[in-house]
Image (cartoon, rainbow, N blue to C red; front, side, top):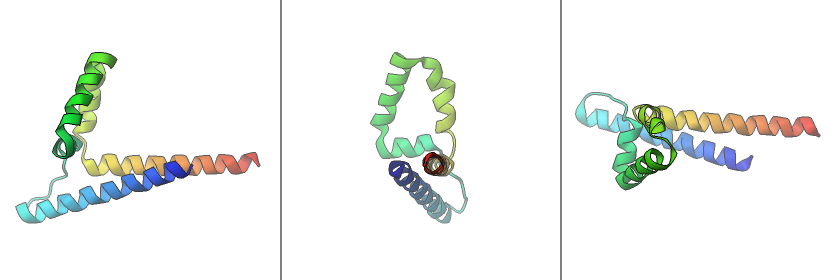
Length: 103
């Protein structure tokens, strides 16, 4: 349960950092736009993005990459990170509630 809370908080912080980066970029450029997850991942570590694509397409199923993963990679980083954080915190809350009911 603690791991879900920790990861949830880390994802929320990552979403906040992504939002601040987008705001800073908007100040420089003069136009606000949310950065897609794929661009963020490519900028941080392009080799792991390429490796993930190769593994999924070759060993899992090509249909998972396109359109599945491609769709998520086109979503804004802020939404994906914040959504994952909220989801993990909700799971932690449900586990905590379930643990209390058992007692």
